Amino acid sequence: MSAVAVVVFPGSNCEHDVVRALRGLGGDARLVWHGDESLGDASAVVLPGGFAHGDYLRPGAIARFSPIMAAVAEFAAGGGPVVGICNGFQVLTEAGLLPGALRRNTGLRFVCETVTCTVVSSRSVLTSGVAPGTRLALPINHGEGNFTCDPATLAELESSGQVVLRYEGNPNGSVAAVAGVANAQGNVVGLMPHPERASAGLLGSDDGLVLLRSLLDSAADGALSGRSRGAAAR
Amino acid sequence: MGRDAPRDGARRVGLVRFDVHVEVRGLEGIADPEGQTIERALPALGFRGVDSVHVGKVVRFVLDAPDGESARATAEEMCARLLANPVIERAEVTVVPAAAPQPVAGS
Image (cartoon, rainbow over all chains, first blue to last red; front, top):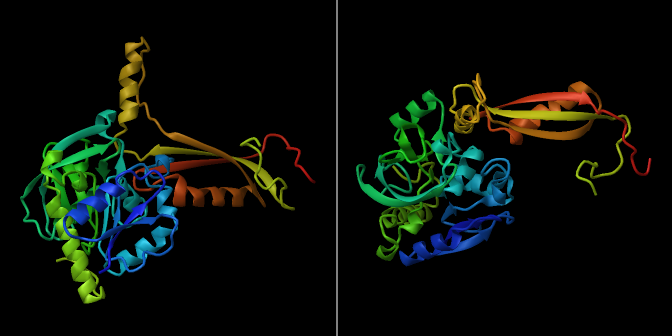
């Protein structure tokens, strides 16, 4: 069975956590170096958290030019599930695979805490198995997670179910307290919270597992259908 | 090797050296928490009358190009593709002929 490809950039630091959490759910996952040009037969892609290329210039600004990103864009265009967590979310916005941008947190603080998020939409590969309204305790850990976009884009995201996750409270100043967004097809998702760090009761929460399980299910669906359709989740 | 020295050493024939100065700022209307924090800090040090503080970044480099117009066009393309994120930032490009001819090794 094909595996979830977890991309390692220089400066990534959550890749092993993601692999471990996915394997704990019975999924297969492997690391892929950012300098590679192929994802092989990957069933899904995760861009993990960290500080790719030291966050130089802007978080994700350099990583989007890594050789693997052409393959990630092609995989996404074919409907393949792509999830960016934290720094991975920043990379996806810089690459233009997701709308908006992530700016310095309001208050200029690096925030590191467990927050409560609400699933807003099931129309994404990461939330397809989770009912809207479900509340999840998820850790956040970032200095630049302040999601922003222009009002017209926000209205479009809201009306089309592309806002998939929202903070209760607003730890970083994001517009409309957005914690995660998807592209129009729902197969590319970015979120600032770390589901892989909420993967066992011992870690304080295992609420991230429902998200990762949705991803594995979407990956399996895509593998079955040969991934010819545009949207992996509806 | 100094970071100011051109990497390839020699300038290509027919090209002129320009100093390029790119100032990247947040788009109007987008909150600038760094600027706001500095704006609050300055009065605490006794500076009066400060308003509209904005924090950006500056990227400076030298660029060899046929003329000023093409140097500017190249720099603006750099801004669009890498130096600024158009969703949240705008860039202002200043291009001037390099201050003094620099001795170039091997020519």
